[in-house]
Image (cartoon, rainbow, N blue to C red):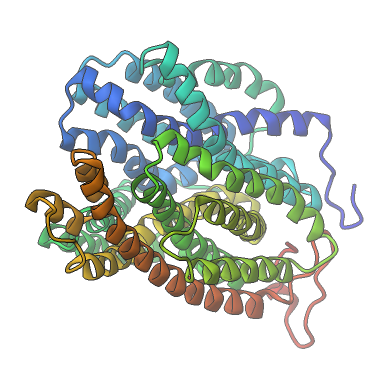
Length: 524
């Protein structure tokens, strides 16, 4: 027992954390290995461009759409039970994807993988909050859990590249089978069951409204990011918002809501979710721009571009491990605030890059960016989980994941579109004379289009085309970095102001004078 009365986790719980880490790592890895496999499976299955997009996107759509229902379902039927069901479904869907014989069959398998992944993610986080009730141990465990997502990004490109050299594309999906078999065997032995004993039945109309809210909005922002504004994407977002309002109104009137919207009245809970949303919004956009710069401006291969991100992923993994330890001595808000200051500094440097800046500046900058941003993810997630009652842990875990999913999509749709607009404005009249009309038009459309067009030109013309493209794309990076610095700086100031009273991890919070004890929150 700790001084605060919470029992300390033992060997069994730490072994259980290792078991929980495996499916979490796999869910993250599944995204990154598919990026490399897409050209191979598309050629083998004869998938057209539209089918390729659905093969890539449908997984994320399903994860985002089912996170809240699955998180709440776990609170009702038991988080371990739902995790094992999700693991079995993920393994079966992996087999289906590996041996798919048509694009439609693979898309269907990806749908099942997304639904199963949505069952896994909030269940793992909720089980961690049950297994690690000591605040210091819980923060460390969540840091390790969060590092699995970056480890998936590190391992994915390398493992995918190696396997594609020796096996067929379906072998990448088979990675999930032994992991899920291990989960099904070891899970019941080392993972505790936890559920809300007073939970009611799942409200099916609320599930439908949740899906009707999440899926159209995610689809709309992704379409805007990919193809620009259109009536269809706008209508999807509006429909999602309208259904979202109906969803919230229904939850307020239910005795056992699918999502307890009163959780958002908790300042620590809401502030942490907004912080996670803000960081994922700029983080996803920075990664997108970096990979585009590597591949288009520097003419690096996709594998080389992925390797260029590895130092950043490794730095984030280290930070996930270290920041919970630092936060035992220093208030979490100050640790996060210092990290955000580092993120802002890197973005300011990025806003001053030259068109001929080498890749080393971006690689080192992204490593610092990732190291400094990790405390917000690890400690913010810990605050989200620690701020809610134990019986709501599944819902809290689902909402933290939705903040990351939606933030990344929204960032690409807004900041990414802003960068594209700046690029197009700068490159419009900068394409030199003598460039074939189709190549010039491709360059005015996007930097990736310019890179593709340059490959079909003589070397001298290709160099002449890519020079203004690099300058214009760097101008887009300048604008996005400057706007991102302002956004995350404002978010950081508000976060520190609202959360500065939260004591270091493991220390009890002293009630403010005149504040009723019933309004106090759990220590971080």
